[in-house]
Image 1 (cartoon, rainbow, N blue to C red):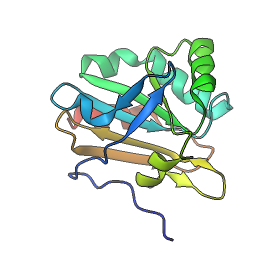
Image 2 (spheres, rainbow, N blue to C red):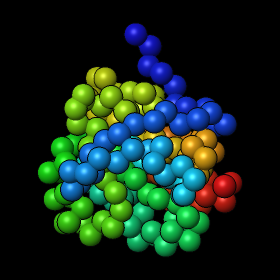
Image 3 (spheres, rainbow, N blue to C red):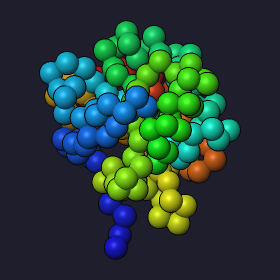
Image 4 (cartoon, one colour):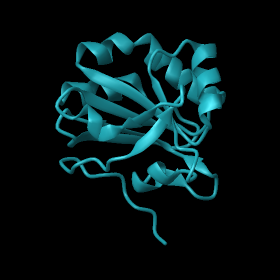
Length: 156
């Protein structure tokens, strides 16, 4: 079965509900009418590139907040793993567990790598009306540049 493509710019972002690092349900459509959302798929907690990327986002969280954008990281890790990861690295943003069914949301967003069992580094910026305004992806092992986030936020 072919891998779906990431949602197209201008399309409504596929809705989902996942549990955050505290076990609370978070639904993408609940942000509609309130804030934009940067959905940041990452392969696995506690790995070098993922930790570096998320630490850079943590250190630049004011850029997202100033633009009214909620930052949401998604991986196939469990909620317990994501909670420990967030606590250890002082992440003050939401991490969601795409744990079970394994990688279902990443698959719907065209981000799941079947051979590896985790998501690629895809970012999708969704505006306050639930419409995809930007998306970008980098090859495995590469970090997404902060400039790509700046450009995406500026396009809101």
